[in-house]
Length: 105
Figure (cartoon, rainbow, N blue to C red):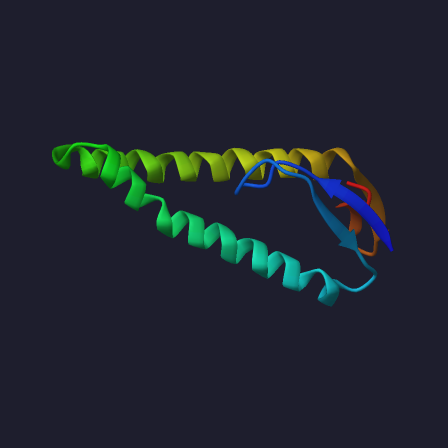
């Protein structure tokens, strides 16, 4: 069992200890609970936006919030793909070489 420290979680910058095990079933509950927390935060975000903007600007505020969430997801995905692609190793298969990210990514 290896342990790694992961920082800057979307719900706040703090260090979270994540344990990587040999079986994916041990990692699935952490992933599900993390995604549930993000979904709750995304669902709750429009309420403070409506409180702090004028009534006529609530549509604009919610639109900007949605755009920023989409852009953040796109940038985050690009960063993860870059990290995984950087650690990729080529493996020979019957149909030709395939690049697969290593476990140390």
